[in-house]
Image (cartoon, rainbow, N blue to C red):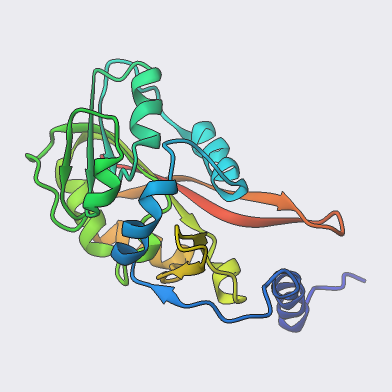
Length: 237
């Protein structure tokens, strides 16, 4: 006799994963700042490299899905202090352009071709970019569609967008992206959970398609691997 798992079985499994995250949460409630306010304070202590476990796990997964950047025009979208722009340059990109809506982060960015702009209104020509890299930024936005629509507009035919996000299961279980400011206080950063279905719908409506996806995990104290970031590789026909 074949025993098929029930819906209750699946819910129990999901709740077990979420409970593991709850045990990691600090017992205090942190003040949440808008992304602009957060990065204005964070910029001074935000080097252009993967400087914490979350970012190290995220970058390793991004590199596994990254297309060949040699000779390509690359947009580092929501570039911050330039982590992915510097990586793209090291991987042979012909031209690297960085855009971010935080003036403080751009002032700490060593790249030369950078500009102040939002991901929802990219100041670039149609079909002018081969690859878009966007790390841990779209979760700050309540809606994905405006940004994905802009990504489609600027990508050349056959272009690729590689996007990472804080895993929605972590956030929905109470996890937060946090940082310690120069005043010594720890703050949470504004975040909106976007499920796989949200990315799928927004991509389809923006004439992009999800070619690949990866959930990058860390090992918990009990030995279980639990996803903390999710990476999407989107393509334009």
